[in-house]
Image 1 (cartoon, rainbow, N blue to C red):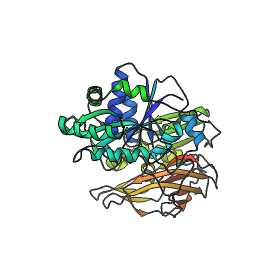
Image 2 (cartoon, rainbow, N blue to C red; image 1 turned 90 degrees about the vertical axis):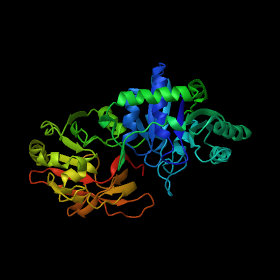
Image 3 (cartoon, one colour; image 1 turned 60 degrees about the vertical axis):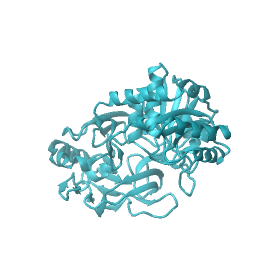
Image 4 (cartoon, rainbow, N blue to C red; image 1 turned 45 degrees about the vertical axis):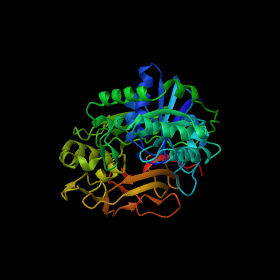
Length: 440
């Protein structure tokens, strides 16, 4: 495996993404080919990683993926260094293990042998920072702490006090980010604004790279990067939805995992993107149509007015399978109520009605047992995925697509939907985003 580092923190909001993007940009400026990864289910961060690295960032998920699948996804290529960004706190996951762990970033560090660079928010503390670092270093014997990067350091005196504590417990400082060096990315309710929507993205990444190059020891970080061999045992794979797949792809439909598209292409499928926001219909020569998640609620008026898209999708669905995930599922529904309370008609291929006027967070891993066929799997197949949205379900009248539980086995109401069309087509949708087929 390629040597790497896993950027982690005690909690969200500590500075992982800032350090990750700056580190990728700084190393790339030095001529290092960086391969990015993201631990856990996330679409926003990998898009920024890809912009910084110039190559796709792939998600690694120990709850949804087998160790063999993770090994295959991290197999060596032409990159000189791996930079993986953790999610939440380093050891945070679910209560019941899945395929290769509980979904914690620490699981990925243990499986791959990538040592952890821990980002610590030093505001309001001094020598006590060392106690926190020591706890993280000792919590799991199979996870190695390479060192720490201190964030929000107020002054030279503040830094000296923190360093004194860390020296006492033999934990290396790999970087120090002063409080004034904060690099902020725009945010919205599901996290960061998408990379493609961020104005002056190149300038932002260049700034991040300059700051990290100035404040961190890049040479030392490269020196402490390691990995361990992994057994690329056979992993369960899903068939592509068709030989030729019409894929909705624009600012409203951008949440699709790169590893799924790669698997479909590896199986021989051709993916043909189209833009509903540009009022484009799916390729009439495709075998199946896939509508990923995204932010349809931000573009509801345009989607409601996109007559070519809506008519083309309805015609497509008469004879072929159409599937939507989360935002795509909502667009397949009858209507969507935006945050201002205005209802916009969607495609009407399913009876689903959703509303953002009354927000309710739905978040967590999902294990689904299919009750009916989908474009990727037959009935009885168990799928692992993740759900994250703020839509309230007003109506979900169609036949349930699956029996769905959370990570602990508790059933959830978001069962997905199935509707057959008169011409033999099949329209399906789920609120969870598919990650992988369950191994058993």
